Amino acid sequence: MSQLLLDVNALTMRFGGLVAVNGVNLKVKNRQIVSIIGPNGAGKTTVFNCLSGFYIPTAGSVMFKNEQIAGLKDFQISRKGLVRTFQHVRLFSNMTVVENMLVAQHRHLNTNLFSGLFKTPSYRRKEGEAMDHAAQWLEEVGLLDVANRQAGNLSYGQQRRLEIARCMVTQPELLMLDEPAAGLNPNETKELDELIIKLRDEHEISILLIEHDMSLVMGISDHIYVIAQGTPLADGSPEEIKNNPDVIKAYLGED
Ligand SMILES: Nc1ncnc2c1ncn2[C@@H]1O[C@H](COP(=O)(O)OP(=O)(O)OP(=O)(O)O)[C@@H](O)[C@H]1O
Image (cartoon, rainbow, N blue to C red):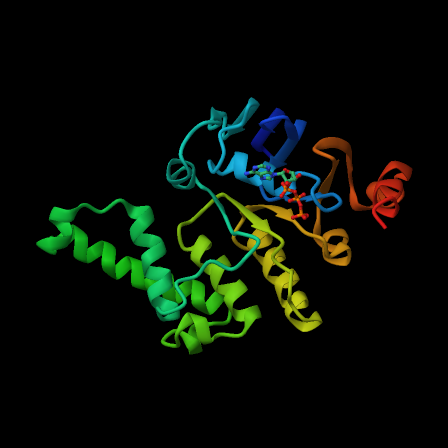
């Protein structure tokens, strides 16, 4: 049964005199792919920054699993099961692919200095599990055969998939992807499309997506929210959004 995972009400973010996000509402249920679309500068990334703890919203509520998370720090929110990627790839490019996966888990696991220094049995067990999870997720995203390659030497599409694997290894319930298809070629976009659907259908997580690639958004979203100039414009199924005159006007008005 679908349960509400994320419930955002009247989210507002001001930067001095600029209201970047103005009264945005958003709901994500379990096992849903939900997209946020809108013209450039509409406030989409600012919404992500408010939900993931990079900004403290000026007003509004962000309930995740029935708990208020607005104002918590980014690492506190990610430990609760809400993780994100960024518009620009943020990997440790001098580390190997598998090292990137291990670092992500170490930051998440909260192991202490004592257990690390003395390699206690529980530390060793966690290390073993971290390696198993890393291998499992590298296989899921098709990167197991490049596990020992330097992350910075991967193709752009592979780097994007590594970012997703790095999030997934922390076992989130909600994964937020900020423009994951930007810069990908059509083949890579198709692989991304399949991966996102697999995350929902086989791994039973929810995905909140910001994306400008309309065929990707329309093809995979269960629900779409449109914002323009920080303000909610419409929400509905892909079919409803495609045919909404206000949405068409907002996009055509951009050109
Ligand atoms: N830290 C900040 N300080 C001041 N203004 C900001 C800050 N972050 C975002 N803004 C402003 O808020 C508005 C919304 O920006 P945001 O990046 O959220 O839009 P977006 O919809 O993600 O755009 P795009 O699709 O181009 O990535 C813009 O006018 C931007 O300049």
